Length: 492
Image 1 (cartoon, rainbow, N blue to C red):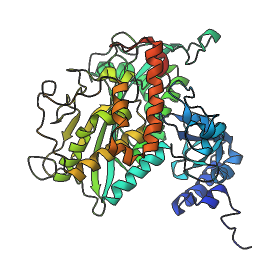
Image 2: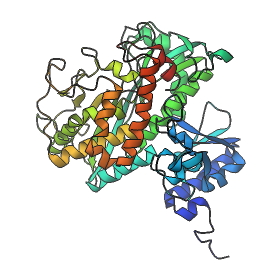
Image 3: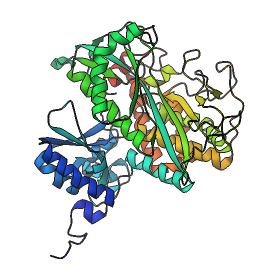
């Protein structure tokens, strides 16, 4: 029988959406589904907020669905953090000036077979991370995973690969009341009621570690069974606050890890009577803010040598210094990607182990970017401490790359190390999400990197979030509001 043409093949074949490695991985996925006698497979994609959405198919349908794709409605790409549609999707072009987005039509999730996992907490369940395309095979321009892949490709053309290690803080509470009465099903719903697992304020003490260990052990084992590169599990300073760190990964892998890690932790916790929240600062008495510190370096494309390492007391190579200069130069506009919620800006406070201005320092936890390593150390890296754990990892990573590349291209000097971070004169970080969105709108580096259409799309959604907050919460507030608790506690 002659081979099928692309025109008559599956959706994946017709549009050439898999490489050879993915095709081989798909065959392996089929074998695993049969061998493990899986019953269902979840097909998921990370939306504009980094939240996983998708559909669950019977295992018997998974092989065909991997190749034919799974349809979803385009309105999912038009929603803010309350899951409210903020674009006029039933007008010409759907409010996007894109015919495929009009009328709430379909797009197609196409599995990346290399991401397949068996979920240890869900009975006989497989999972696949997907990329998204319109039904005509065109890539969806609002796919954040694709935009991150674009940034990595741009970096590769410059001769480098991106390497990142994750350091993620979050809160783990005992779930007291899930608020499931009909009167609580508002939009967004009322936030669940929780209690603490520890009273906090004993950073890294054995007693606090052991108090929280029965709950953390359940999470740790689940994460390990997913084969994610978990490195450490720690108790943080705040009440009921934890930190998980991961070994460095190259390319897209660290962002994929973050997406699956957050979803796994939330699902495992909920099934065991806990609530895990990656909201930066919950509206609860005495709790501390959580951050997401992104450790990053560049590897030279051919040698894989750390391009930041320098056998000199300065620690950073010329490339590393310029990259750092780019992170600082675009800090205000990049904040919209690193800290994309109203709530996250309540963390930018002086003398709080969080940054409040665009500065760097050698091994200093008060700065925005902390330089770590020793002269000639192959582990030399930059730790950007600006992010919140609710950030979309694809946009966070991509934004760092574009900032750094601009710094290299323009040879931006990062200035001297700020050894007194809360007294050093420097550009302040945005005071709120509205300021960050305004800065992002006019940042030509991001408009060129992500594309002007994507920046306009993203800022429109975030502006809608700001507008609802100002209208419903009554303007900007220094303290965390009930509006934020409803909006973010259980979403992230």
